[in-house]
Length: 326
Image (cartoon, rainbow, N blue to C red; front, top):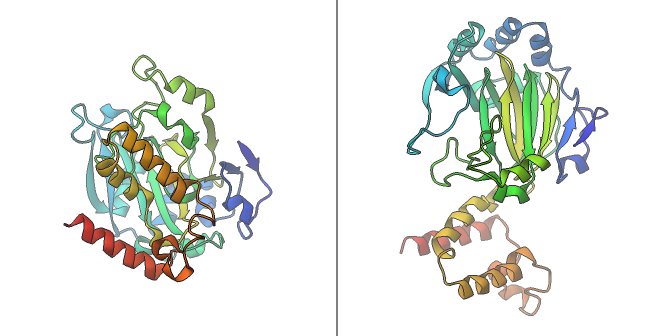
């Protein structure tokens, strides 16, 4: 993995933010007041956070001691091994400082909505389109490998976190779970990264060989490109990160996960020859597209084969909804 310690939080290079490979950014946000508080003590870190919303009600995951910190499915695979609860943010901080035996995990909680002012006091100048900035906080928890559609910079601000990353092409070796029943919206690997069962998941041996494993200290950051699989482990009783998500395409382009779900409905169970024909059509219009695909059509008549802007995206979405509702 590429590692850099020469990057400033005030001037992240554009080529880094568009990289197709992960980049470890040592000390990127060590100057943040949030990180400086954590370096003093867990109590100082939690005290600093309380100043931005101790009474804010937040949703978190709570798992019994028996799950060993691993948030996952239940044995029947019809639910999960944790419960979702809502309570005051200050109560979560108290539990963490008290050394709760329960696995506690506050995931993806938007800073501006829940903790006004926290982002402004701990800034990162990305110069990207509409970043979503969130807080993640917990104790010694483990999150299965998953991918995100946006690009991501994860900034560890308290404790240590271990990331295990896999490139997108290793999806076959990761044994992905259900697409429509997921812990947090994204499909996850069924392999326990801490104790992989290679008898049950033999292809994971190849993923192990190609895995990139890195431990981040408070103040370090990690750039994770879109669709890179990553499992995350909190190594200390109090650990937290602030992450920045953004897409290199406009929001009106929607998520390709919707395309995947629709393809399962319409393409997967076709006869092989028909699937192959559709694959060729997708290559022609999507995956291998160039400026010749519609060059023979007058520009004014190209419709959805022309450039997609916000207006055309709304029109196309309306057409799709109408077709799906027939």
